[in-house]
Image 1 (cartoon, rainbow, N blue to C red):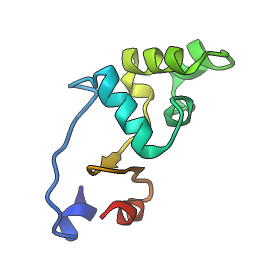
Image 2 (cartoon, rainbow, N blue to C red):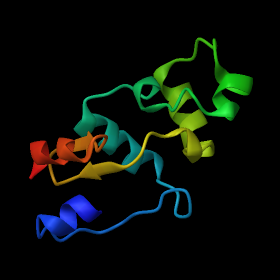
Image 3 (cartoon, helix red, strand yellow):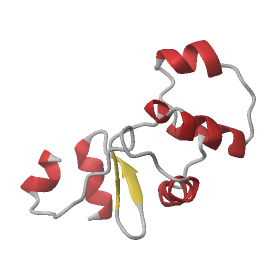
Image 4 (tube, rainbow, N blue to C red):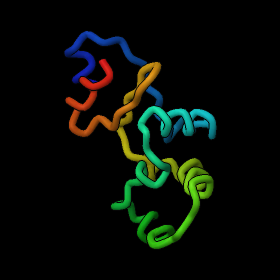
Length: 97
């Protein structure tokens, strides 16, 4: 947020841990990222290691897992109308400004 503020960019924050994404919203973000559902998983999370590591799920199954366990999603994600980026490091945001 600090990076965007310093650039003078107006933005809206969506805390998807508190306000879950719909399946359609999530698929749109994946499309904008050009990632599969598995690529957005935070594999260092304990819940991933204990419940999902090693599972061979298809795309729709991973989407279901992620929507039910949003803590597993990499963040922060920043999106505009056409593209999204994982903002680690924050300079990645430059790609969509």
